[in-house]
Image (cartoon, rainbow, N blue to C red; front, top):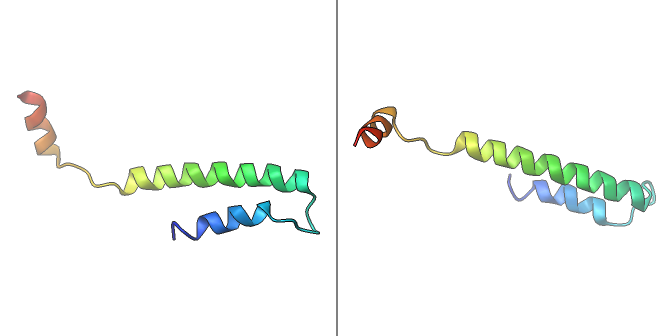
Length: 61
């Protein structure tokens, strides 16, 4: 899934008769920014966590 998201963003860089280049560039930046935020948030939420007891024991010593 991580490799499929850049395909949609990169497709905006190609010349398209339906979308002027200026609009495509702005939409590319918008899509890239939201994809990066989504990826960072998903990575943070899905990263493994330490058990609470281990964190408390490490902080106490």
